Length: 201
Image (tube, rainbow, N blue to C red; front, side, top):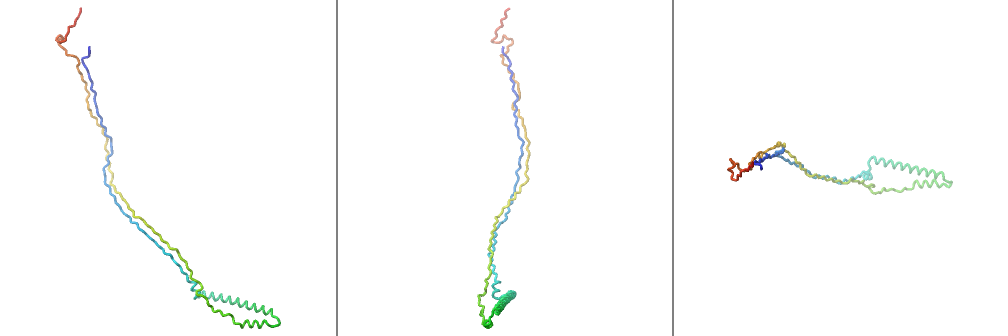
């Protein structure tokens, strides 16, 4: 005897779709402003400087009043030294004089003897000019042009898109009952394959 009914169960089938949450950026506009700072070339030059001091050279030709007084004072001192030397020499000669009397005539001859004439010939000016100099200087300063970039951007806008979960039932649950037996005949004797049941007493 085999089963006459076959029962088949069909499970439910669900499809799930998940959408993640996200930020969406709304595009904005940007502006750029460019400005230029001009540079330049600067050259600074100080030429050589020559200093010529002719004070001493001019004083040697035409002395100033102060220099003339100073020179005269020096000459007076020199003349006093020379006169003192002459008097000292004459005094010593008189102290050393002998009886022959030759000292006084000698002193007389020295007094009347013509002195050497100083013609005061000299090269003028006796002192040259004082020369000094300061070295030259040159400085070069170069500055390149500058470009300034100013970015102006609008406010950034973000939109939040929440996540989503979507369920889709692709197959409904079901129970399938299938009869797998043969046909039932009423009365059983109408079955073409009927065989009487042999019941032995």
